[in-house]
Image 1 (cartoon, rainbow, N blue to C red):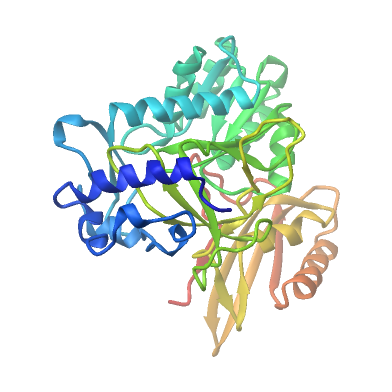
Image 2: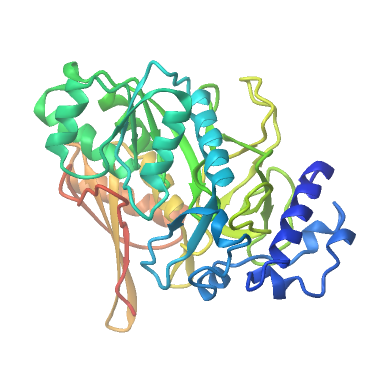
Length: 410
């Protein structure tokens, strides 16, 4: 997908502001690039912006405006190294609220809804983003944050929450707890807006069935405003994204070249209007594809497919490349297998061993379902594994994101 002329002019404006701000990462990065000479054809030859560069610029190397224009900062968790700090101007905050409000509207949520917000607040962009959009929409925000499931359910019942915002892991935990307590008839939820982690079809169906809600995938990342830059509609699974605020490319993660529309690759995002920390051709490492077909809903905003994984999430076992999405694809088609799984990879007696733990439903035979999983994994992924089933509820649940793969070889 080629950048439009009006989008390119916004990029040039952002770049000029960034390179003129002393200390900004683009001051040196674009020192030898004539910004005015960039064309729609040459845009895809501009250098990528990498996450490592944002870390190296800690704390405020991405800031592109003077301090007095910054009203807020947000940050990545920093669990894998130096945190990335993103500064926001008031316009950035307002633009983010507008995009998030669009997401709610796309999901059919109105100012009559009561939105139960469970993602975390603080330096992260999660909870406060869901609240920003809610307030812009004019709906009632119930800013719970994560944890304290007893209180979550009490407030959900007493305040008659109609929309649940959560990670898929916490939505499943709440759904299971509601079923266990037999209180579904007291729950008024109609919709769920789920983000922050990829989730498979089996988990999606379990949450929808147990809560009795319509589910929507919301997309975003801290470096690019936060959640709210895209969401699917009721008509179809792919997500509309707001191309008046971001330009999105799909590249081959190995070559860095743009792929044809419809092909799977890595999402690269350029902000069009961001003031505090504009980013040019930022590699997200999220894997998806442009969906070129028109959406049945009639919305003109372009679409990408559901996130299928991350280019840096790949694990290699016995020479076989494996993505989490492949594991979910195997499990979703086997009767008696639930949505939750966990992978342990060990190096024992000179060889790699992959053990796949998964939850089975009460009506299946343990030995039969394990054999089926082992055979299907070998057939579809090309690797012999050790399949081990456990009863539903035995694998850990999380109030945030669930860690599913543990590589103990290193």
